[in-house]
Amino acid sequence: MTIIVTGGAGFIGSNFVFHMLGAHPDYRIVCVDKLTYAGNLSTLESVMDNPNFRFCKLDICDREGIDKLFDEEKPDIVVNFAAESHVDRSIENPEIFLQTNIIGTSVMMDASRKYGVKRYHQVSTDEVYGDLPLDRPDLFFTETTPIHTSSPYSSSKAGADLLVLAYYRTYGLPVTISRCSNNYGPYHFPEKLIPLMIANALADKPLPVYGKGENVRDWLYVEDHCKAIDLIIHNGKVGEVYNVGGHNEMKNIDIVKLICKELGKPETLITYVADRKGHDMRYAIDPTKIHNELGWLPETKFADGIKKTIKWYLDNEKWWKDIISGDYQNYYDRMYSNR
Ligand code: NAD
Ligand code: TYD
Image (tube, rainbow, N blue to C red):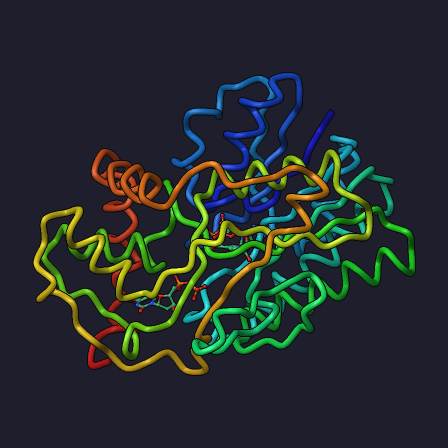
């Protein structure tokens, strides 16, 4: 079995590569990644010498390069993680989101059709459903909730999802889609809430909370997401969407306070800054379908997962310090100074 994993040098993709090489030692995993600012080859250091692993620096929009790779590898399955993934960057500059997230998806699916893959899996997000109001805790996203996006990021992911379902209906491409809630864990790029707050707290820098910090996200440990995708590509029904989430809703401010507590840092570091434009209020997944059909349940409780994550950032300072000392500093200044 050969699986092409795109975006495998990023946060979730790399965790998926590690999971698959461990869970299926007889599979060949071919990682395709353009190594944008968010992709980091050092993340994959531990598997580079694994004979069942190949890394290929390639843009998923590069039709010729992708076709050549499919010709060489003859993959059975494609799992498409590659994407521009940060909402704030999409507000600053939407174009690259349309290019990678929509055009890139079409290139990967065209190659999948041409070479007759057994499964094309699209890694999507709960953000395609838009948001839920804070005063309706009884509401959750199900797979039939209408697509109703807020940001250029979520719109580009929704566009890709529609295209994936169109390739199923029009061409019979054997697709599945997973829509997961917010992930956290090792190798999370430090522009995102949890790693950013850990890095800033460790440096005794202000912790920039958008708006009032009351926005709610439904956090899932990254390994649980990887296990869900593993189940879907093997046992999921073609043409179906699966929501993935662990009923772990938390307000941003409570996450930031928890990080302060775990690191022994004062809450006075918390600084309220101007809100994100179009900021989604609440995400909350109903994971009944994947539980009932595939037996998936999250295994890591947030209380344990956040401790493991903080410990990982403490033990792997070089990984994230190398990132934040480079080009990232310009991004940080642009985003946060005078905010
Ligand atoms: P990430 O930004 O950490 O990683 C993205 C990876 O894709 C990077 O390695 C980058 O180099 C690569 N990439 C970007 N453009 C590319 C291109 N044109 N060609 C090839 N590679 C390219 O993102 P992530 O958080 O790991 O998210 C992975 C996927 O999961 C995305 O599709 C995202 O929409 C989805 N998702 C993320 C979350 C989350 O909480 N992070 C939740 C649900 C779904
Ligand atoms: P983020 O990690 O960017 O994920 P997403 O927007 O995809 O959910 O942000 C999570 C939440 O944290 C979101 O409500 C925005 C908020 N946030 C802050 O308050 N401060 C920050 O510096 C960042 C990066 C995010």
